[in-house]
Image (cartoon, rainbow, N blue to C red; front, side, top):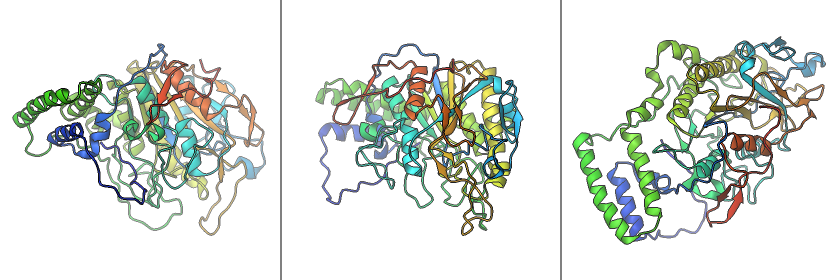
Amino acid sequence: MTCPRTAPTDATIRHPAFTRRFAIQAGAVGLLGLGLDHLAALRAAGSPAGLTGGTARSVIFIFLSGGLAQHESFDPKPDAPEDIRGEFRPIATRTPGVHICEHLPMLAARSDLWSMVRSLTHPHNDHSAGHHVMLTGRSELPPGFSVNRPNPTDWPSIASVVGAVSGPRGNLPPAVVLPERLVHNTGRVIPGQFGGAMGPRRDPWFVEASAFDPRAYGAFPEYEFDHQDRPRTALRQRFQVPDLTLPEGLGGGRFEGRLGLLAQLDRQRVGLDGSSSAGEFDARRQAAVSLLTDAKIRRAFDVSESDPKLLDSYGRNSFGWSLLMARRLVEAGVALVQVNLGNNETWDTHGNAFPHLKDKLLPPTDRAVSALLEDLQSCGLLDSTLIVMAGEFGRTPRISTLPSAYKLPGRDHWGRIQTVFLAGGGVVGGRVVGSSDRIGGHPASEPQTPEDLAATIYHALGISATAEWHDGLGRPHQVYHGKPIAGLS
């Protein structure tokens, strides 16, 4: 588990200056066998704010990087002209009068467990801007925003805000992102995923369980594909479960001995600095120890040993494994788990859209999300777990072609409207909030914004309407910039 960041861009190279306290803490981390790159997370302060007792204990935020086409999922337009309605046909759901795409039959049969907002809108059609907007819940781009890299002036991600405001629960990280960071196929890291103006100490914990392959998309291994159908060899054959075991030669007695030495260092550190931050560091260090030694937490990450029937229900692929891991983590007590269903641009269906959606993308999504709903309901966690599924934008109402890159047609980027899926955590199933126009291009009623979606998440978790987060200089910022979406509960 890592909290990676992009390299500094300041052209002026300066020698680092370390305080004595920093050196003591760094030595303590090294004794645990973790390494200096974990120090920022270990030093993060708790600062929990007053919570108001929301309906949800946890949130699973499913992010569909690339942008899911609303016509080919939850907002079909069967009466529109062919170049708008597309190749797929609608099917009835369990909710009278509500239809969705024919390639989501399992979700259609469970529509009493989920609802949707068909009118979420923002003004951005660029991938990086769209990611930043939807992952942070802020439609206005921050000062210094760059599509090419994360910046320290970026707004903090929803995961970072939840982690900072709700604080740690016991010795668990408050917010986790899995199974990978969102990285463009050129290698540039997508903005909006990190702590931004809060500073890197507020980055969520990233579980790197999925190897990066710039030409591979989808639910590997069985549903892996390339958007342009180029000849390639599938490299990702299994889920790389994070290694939470102790380093070689650091078992049992030696580990306890090092913890004893840490206690001595703690006494020295407290003598050097009696501030309240000492206790905050202790909590973070204990979290690291727990990740290494707590069997319950290790089991949450290792889904490979699950009951075979459960694995089959989720699907033995990266989509299924990711959502099963998310369920394990919220059961363990993590406040927010962001699940990236597919690496960056997996859902970017400019071309070859209909065969790829039909054969590669919608089937594993339909199965895995349906299994998550059933699993949470059967173990009594659905009412206390809010599920949100969205991408950075929708797709254009009119089908287009790019013959230089794709054999078959698709749809372009479209921030004006997308459908958002919600379930659990106080959401009443079978409801539809808002609507799109007759071609699925703009909101026709009850338009909602990314700010409203973020507010829905914060409200469900019981975060106070007056809650604040603080940037790296200690300046306060409002958590809420919208209102919770009405009509879902």
